[in-house]
Amino acid sequence: MTRWNRVLLIFLILGLFMADFESLSFGSAPKPPVKLTTAKFVKVIDVDTIEVIINNKKEEIRIADVDYPDVKLYKKEIINFVQKNLQGKTLYLELTAKDKQGRFVVYIWLSPPNQINEQEIKTKLFNALLFMKGYAQLATNPVSIKYKSHFIKFQNEAKGKKLGIWKTLEVKELVRDKKQIIVYITETGGKYHRGNCKYLEKSRISISLEEAQKQGYKPCKICKPPE
Image (cartoon, rainbow, N blue to C red; front, side, top):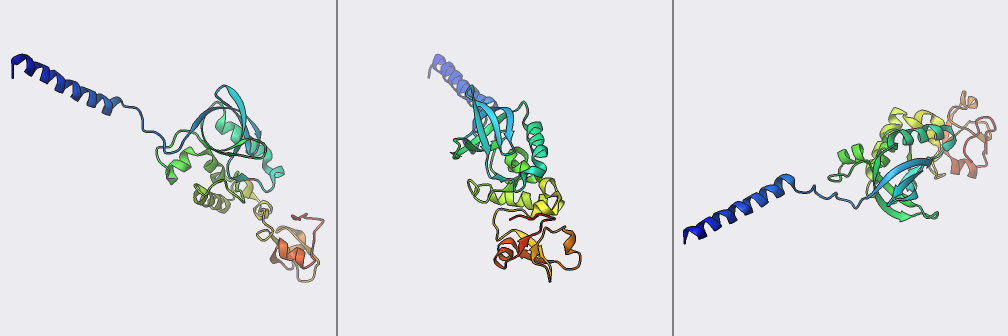
Protein backbone atom coordinates (compact mmCIF):
# COMPACT_ATOMS: atom_id res chain seq x y z
CA MET A 1 0.00 0.00 0.00
CA THR A 2 1.41 3.40 -0.96
CA ARG A 3 1.85 6.20 1.52
CA TRP A 4 -0.95 8.18 -0.13
CA ASN A 5 -3.34 5.24 0.16
CA ARG A 6 -2.45 4.82 3.84
CA VAL A 7 -3.24 8.50 4.46
CA LEU A 8 -6.60 8.16 2.72
CA LEU A 9 -7.41 5.05 4.77
CA ILE A 10 -6.57 6.85 8.02
CA PHE A 11 -8.81 9.80 7.09
CA LEU A 12 -11.60 7.41 6.13
CA ILE A 13 -11.38 5.60 9.47
CA LEU A 14 -11.30 8.92 11.36
CA GLY A 15 -14.34 10.14 9.39
CA LEU A 16 -16.35 7.03 10.23
CA PHE A 17 -15.35 7.27 13.89
CA MET A 18 -16.37 10.95 14.13
CA ALA A 19 -19.72 10.29 12.40
CA ASP A 20 -20.47 7.49 14.84
CA PHE A 21 -19.44 9.67 17.79
CA GLU A 22 -21.69 12.52 16.68
CA SER A 23 -24.65 10.19 16.27
CA LEU A 24 -24.12 8.98 19.83
CA SER A 25 -23.60 12.41 21.36
CA PHE A 26 -25.89 14.64 19.35
CA GLY A 27 -28.40 12.29 17.76
CA SER A 28 -32.12 13.01 17.90
CA ALA A 29 -34.07 11.96 20.99
CA PRO A 30 -35.85 8.61 20.81
CA LYS A 31 -39.40 8.75 19.52
CA PRO A 32 -42.12 8.58 22.18
CA PRO A 33 -43.92 5.22 22.48
CA VAL A 34 -47.24 6.80 21.42
CA LYS A 35 -48.20 8.97 18.47
CA LEU A 36 -48.56 12.55 19.67
CA THR A 37 -50.02 15.74 18.20
CA THR A 38 -48.65 19.04 19.49
CA ALA A 39 -51.20 21.64 20.61
CA LYS A 40 -51.28 24.95 22.44
CA PHE A 41 -53.73 25.35 25.31
CA VAL A 42 -56.25 28.19 24.91
CA LYS A 43 -58.95 27.90 27.57
CA VAL A 44 -61.28 25.63 29.53
CA ILE A 45 -64.72 25.12 28.00
CA ASP A 46 -66.15 22.75 30.63
CA VAL A 47 -64.93 20.29 33.25
CA ASP A 48 -64.13 17.71 30.55
CA THR A 49 -63.53 19.97 27.54
CA ILE A 50 -60.79 22.41 26.62
CA GLU A 51 -59.93 24.53 23.60
CA VAL A 52 -56.53 24.19 21.97
CA ILE A 53 -54.75 25.31 18.82
CA ILE A 54 -53.64 22.52 16.49
CA ASN A 55 -51.90 23.53 13.24
CA ASN A 56 -53.01 27.16 13.71
CA LYS A 57 -56.64 26.09 14.05
CA LYS A 58 -58.74 26.24 17.22
CA GLU A 59 -60.23 22.90 18.24
CA GLU A 60 -62.39 21.77 21.14
CA ILE A 61 -61.17 18.49 22.60
CA ARG A 62 -62.57 16.27 25.35
CA ILE A 63 -60.42 14.78 28.09
CA ALA A 64 -60.58 10.98 27.79
CA ASP A 65 -62.05 8.70 30.46
CA VAL A 66 -63.10 11.39 32.95
CA ASP A 67 -66.61 11.62 34.34
CA TYR A 68 -68.31 13.82 36.91
CA PRO A 69 -71.20 12.36 38.93
CA ASP A 70 -72.23 15.67 40.50
CA VAL A 71 -70.66 18.57 38.63
CA LYS A 72 -72.61 21.31 40.44
CA LEU A 73 -70.70 20.93 43.70
CA TYR A 74 -67.20 21.08 42.28
CA LYS A 75 -67.48 22.53 38.78
CA LYS A 76 -65.71 25.82 39.56
CA GLU A 77 -62.98 24.08 41.54
CA ILE A 78 -62.29 21.58 38.74
CA ILE A 79 -62.26 24.26 36.02
CA ASN A 80 -59.83 26.38 38.06
CA PHE A 81 -57.57 23.36 38.54
CA VAL A 82 -57.51 22.56 34.80
CA GLN A 83 -56.90 26.20 33.89
CA LYS A 84 -54.08 26.59 36.42
CA ASN A 85 -52.26 23.43 35.32
CA LEU A 86 -52.58 23.91 31.54
CA GLN A 87 -52.35 27.69 31.19
CA GLY A 88 -49.70 28.74 28.69
CA LYS A 89 -48.49 25.20 28.06
CA THR A 90 -47.72 23.22 24.97
CA LEU A 91 -49.64 19.95 25.14
CA TYR A 92 -48.92 16.60 23.53
CA LEU A 93 -52.16 14.94 22.57
CA GLU A 94 -52.70 11.23 22.15
CA LEU A 95 -55.76 11.36 19.91
CA THR A 96 -58.48 8.72 19.92
CA ALA A 97 -61.82 8.64 18.11
CA LYS A 98 -64.17 11.63 17.92
CA ASP A 99 -67.29 11.87 20.08
CA LYS A 100 -70.84 12.62 18.92
CA GLN A 101 -70.11 16.35 18.97
CA GLY A 102 -67.14 15.88 16.65
CA ARG A 103 -64.53 16.55 19.35
CA PHE A 104 -61.41 14.46 19.58
CA VAL A 105 -61.29 12.49 22.82
CA VAL A 106 -57.69 12.73 24.00
CA TYR A 107 -55.06 11.73 26.50
CA ILE A 108 -53.12 14.87 27.35
CA TRP A 109 -49.39 14.50 27.93
CA LEU A 110 -47.63 17.47 29.53
CA SER A 111 -44.39 16.25 27.98
CA PRO A 112 -43.70 13.30 25.68
CA PRO A 113 -43.30 10.03 27.61
CA ASN A 114 -40.12 8.02 27.21
CA GLN A 115 -42.00 4.80 27.94
CA ILE A 116 -45.41 3.79 29.22
CA ASN A 117 -45.12 2.95 32.91
CA GLU A 118 -46.71 4.16 36.13
CA GLN A 119 -44.08 6.77 36.89
CA GLU A 120 -44.37 8.38 33.45
CA ILE A 121 -48.17 8.28 33.65
CA LYS A 122 -48.21 9.85 37.12
CA THR A 123 -45.84 12.67 36.26
CA LYS A 124 -46.71 13.44 32.63
CA LEU A 125 -50.29 12.38 31.81
CA PHE A 126 -52.77 15.11 32.75
CA ASN A 127 -55.76 12.72 32.70
CA ALA A 128 -54.01 10.73 35.44
CA LEU A 129 -53.42 13.90 37.47
CA LEU A 130 -57.17 14.55 37.52
CA PHE A 131 -57.76 11.13 39.10
CA MET A 132 -54.86 11.54 41.53
CA LYS A 133 -56.17 14.88 42.79
CA GLY A 134 -59.75 13.63 43.05
CA TYR A 135 -61.01 15.82 40.22
CA ALA A 136 -62.49 13.03 38.10
CA GLN A 137 -64.26 9.72 38.30
CA LEU A 138 -63.50 7.00 35.76
CA ALA A 139 -66.08 6.97 32.98
CA THR A 140 -68.37 3.97 32.77
CA ASN A 141 -67.02 3.22 29.29
CA PRO A 142 -63.37 4.32 29.07
CA VAL A 143 -62.02 5.03 25.61
CA SER A 144 -59.47 2.26 26.04
CA ILE A 145 -58.18 -0.13 28.68
CA LYS A 146 -54.67 1.16 28.05
CA TYR A 147 -54.52 3.34 31.18
CA LYS A 148 -57.63 2.01 32.96
CA SER A 149 -55.84 0.05 35.69
CA HIS A 150 -53.71 3.10 36.56
CA PHE A 151 -56.73 5.42 36.63
CA ILE A 152 -58.63 3.03 38.92
CA LYS A 153 -55.66 2.89 41.28
CA PHE A 154 -55.28 6.68 41.38
CA GLN A 155 -59.03 7.14 41.84
CA ASN A 156 -59.13 4.73 44.77
CA GLU A 157 -56.18 6.48 46.40
CA ALA A 158 -57.94 9.85 46.03
CA LYS A 159 -61.11 8.35 47.50
CA GLY A 160 -59.19 7.06 50.49
CA LYS A 161 -57.70 10.51 51.10
CA LYS A 162 -61.06 12.23 50.40
CA LEU A 163 -59.56 14.56 47.82
CA GLY A 164 -61.49 16.72 45.39
CA ILE A 165 -64.94 15.37 44.57
CA TRP A 166 -64.45 12.63 47.19
CA LYS A 167 -64.45 15.11 50.08
CA THR A 168 -68.07 14.36 50.88
CA LEU A 169 -69.91 11.09 51.30
CA GLU A 170 -72.73 12.32 49.08
CA VAL A 171 -70.49 12.67 46.04
CA LYS A 172 -68.73 9.41 46.77
CA GLU A 173 -72.05 7.64 46.47
CA LEU A 174 -73.00 9.22 43.14
CA VAL A 175 -71.96 6.86 40.35
CA ARG A 176 -73.69 6.15 37.06
CA ASP A 177 -74.80 2.55 37.46
CA LYS A 178 -77.85 2.18 39.70
CA LYS A 179 -76.55 -1.23 40.80
CA GLN A 180 -73.51 0.54 42.27
CA ILE A 181 -75.27 3.56 43.78
CA ILE A 182 -75.58 3.04 47.52
CA VAL A 183 -78.45 4.65 49.40
CA TYR A 184 -79.81 4.04 52.89
CA ILE A 185 -83.16 3.01 54.33
CA THR A 186 -84.46 2.65 57.90
CA GLU A 187 -86.14 -0.29 59.57
CA THR A 188 -89.58 1.32 59.50
CA GLY A 189 -89.52 4.14 56.91
CA GLY A 190 -90.66 4.12 53.30
CA LYS A 191 -87.97 6.41 51.86
CA TYR A 192 -84.32 6.04 50.91
CA HIS A 193 -81.66 8.58 51.92
CA ARG A 194 -78.15 9.89 51.47
CA GLY A 195 -75.59 8.73 54.00
CA ASN A 196 -75.66 11.92 56.06
CA CYS A 197 -79.44 12.32 56.30
CA LYS A 198 -80.78 13.18 59.77
CA TYR A 199 -83.41 10.45 59.48
CA LEU A 200 -80.71 7.77 59.69
CA GLU A 201 -79.80 8.52 63.29
CA LYS A 202 -81.76 5.57 64.76
CA SER A 203 -81.31 2.97 62.02
CA ARG A 204 -79.26 2.81 58.84
CA ILE A 205 -79.41 -0.01 56.28
CA SER A 206 -77.39 0.21 53.06
CA ILE A 207 -79.01 -0.87 49.81
CA SER A 208 -78.47 -0.27 46.10
CA LEU A 209 -80.57 2.42 44.46
CA GLU A 210 -81.90 -0.15 42.01
CA GLU A 211 -83.08 -2.46 44.79
CA ALA A 212 -84.55 0.39 46.84
CA GLN A 213 -86.65 1.49 43.89
CA LYS A 214 -87.71 -2.08 43.14
CA GLN A 215 -88.92 -2.43 46.71
CA GLY A 216 -91.01 0.73 46.42
CA TYR A 217 -88.90 3.13 48.48
CA LYS A 218 -89.22 6.80 47.53
CA PRO A 219 -86.44 9.43 47.64
CA CYS A 220 -86.24 11.53 50.78
CA LYS A 221 -87.35 15.12 50.12
CA ILE A 222 -84.95 16.46 52.74
CA CYS A 223 -81.57 15.00 51.70
CA LYS A 224 -82.57 14.54 48.02
CA PRO A 225 -80.68 11.34 47.08
CA PRO A 226 -80.12 10.34 43.44
CA GLU A 227 -83.13 9.04 41.55
